[in-house]
Image (cartoon, rainbow, N blue to C red; front, side):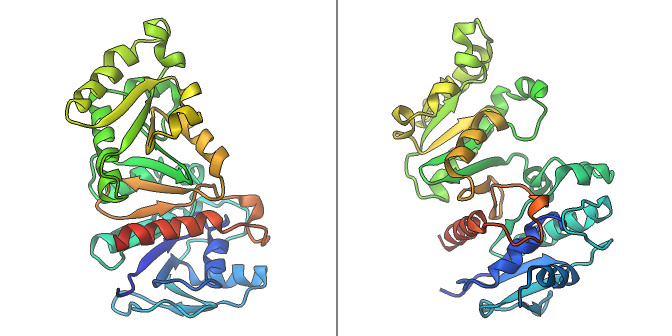
Length: 327
């Protein structure tokens, strides 16, 4: 199989994303990886880390067809607005972060890249710059003109997808409509079949309220919205179980008989997954016309430039992107 090109975006320049990109250079890769970032930033961070990395310039019209030799990294130079100090956020570079994502996403859309792998961004500093930003998932949905995408995190033995993502908790219940739940469930079901090779995915669905509403005594979303929507989809042949209380769903009794869990909101499902597989998990955006995977951790500003980081999650994100593209 001919090698496929993949884009890597380092996210927040003051965080550990640049460090992760540099550490990738020490590992042989089966496909060409293009780091979309500032070359000057990588030079400075490599010096700080004491790493000898050969930065190989690439750009539109001069893309490589073979993986970079060990100890080197392809770089599509993207200028910073301000100098970066490891560990110190600067809102002046918010537009730089979004430009790297735009270059990667557009490259996936036009076939330059087979997929994109993203290191963590800092949502707060981007918003402080005056740019409305709620996360990679929503940004890439807008970029690709995708009406609905689904965030799914996965680690060994557990996949968790979300009906809602980065919303204040007080807004979650209003966001869970029959229409949204149906769209998300269809995307999850279809991508588990088409991108992960599961012919009949088994999906467990969390309730929204404690004890899945306790028969309506602790909320009626399960009765009025969730169960009727699931019943409609079951009639089409989907294997859906729920709504189940989230505090007991994440136990071996249930998980050993499922392929994915559908949680209603961010902090309902992801703390369990990250407890189980932090550092060895991957974030996959389902429903996009492109392949996008990401690490499962944040910017770790306090570790930037220290050399005390683990590339495990990034390696899982790379391997997942490779597998999805190759299939």
